[in-house]
Length: 469
Ligand code: NAD
Image (cartoon, rainbow, N blue to C red; front, side, top):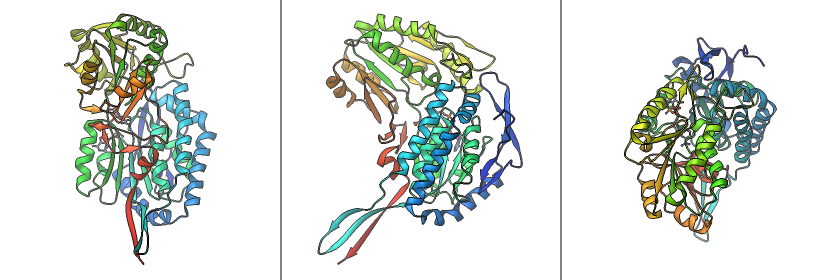
């Protein structure tokens, strides 16, 4: 594999270099990594048409065969993991170790869904009638993916879509198409034509998919603002939607914790992927008794963090993924001193889109630095005395994706966690995801869930089959 690899898009069952190309930028250097196909609106229409034609055949393919295809896709990812990791690091900026997490989780997700139980449930079986609940596929699914975890998030959607008998169009983010295109190349011979297409997007494809009369379901992960547009567009044809949106996760840290043991965990969970994680810790509520010590411990970790090119094995934190995000986070950094005191980091620099892990203490709610989702390595350290006050403040957000409570008393932690308004609530951990555990957003963090049986069901419609006796 070299950076001169010629990328092909899997569209409508064919691998093609496409009729036009777009550059892909390395966020560590701002240099062009390579050029790749950019799907035109005609190619998108073609992919939708072929997907529609492919659907009945895939829907009626025996389940055992669909299971085999998903395992085969997982095998291909594993066999080509090292190459995929390199493309992920080059295009996304994350350290190779972070890319390796994607290439190990993606097959694990696919294998989990490959083994899904799709048998009908008997609701009634007596002398009057036999009633069963069946789950039917929806048809053509469009998977719209953000740039923070390009490969694994595509697989979050591909696995449940295919196993339930849907066909799938994957649209990567315009700034991170490479690993997803490579996935298409690697699996082209495993799936029947039209069952999976990859649509490399120059920035105009999303709206072509949402509201399209021949697309039955949109599985969208991205910002809350775009999620609203998706929902509006989907209304026209009553497209089914799953929306995994933004988050401003709170962690409530009680004063009984061992500061030295917990600080590195909080730090890692706040800054993983350079803070570009929907479910990373974004607001840290720290009880007064340990506030000073915790601020100092976290600041020490931030000052010692190694920021750099993800290809350098010493790098812990890569750059922000794209210029737009870099500029957004820079604006937050400029605002921060008006609202609190920066005790570590604070610098944004180039070439590349680098931001030091930044901690702001003595800050409160009521300003954008705390109240808005910062999708980058800038985190607020908020002080509280009374746990009730912390719960109230943590819940005072339009978002409700994840939250956590940190305490030696896990029973008490669980009681507090159950009162937090979020789709996932953890005790002494955060962002702990597993394929069998559903995750999704409350409030403006989303609609529906991914993972688990509930996530699988999002790709199906219920059919009640009732036979009179
Ligand atoms: P974004 O909303 O800008 O883009 C997400 C995807 O939507 C991209 O593929 C983009 O091309 C596409 N898109 C843009 N406009 C569209 C439109 N009008 N119609 C349809 N699609 C359109 O988000 P982003 O900047 O790529 O990602 C960061 C955001 O994603 C953050 O807010 C983060 O919290 C959120 N996110 C949420 C989850 C979750 O599971 N809840 C996971 C990862 C990221």
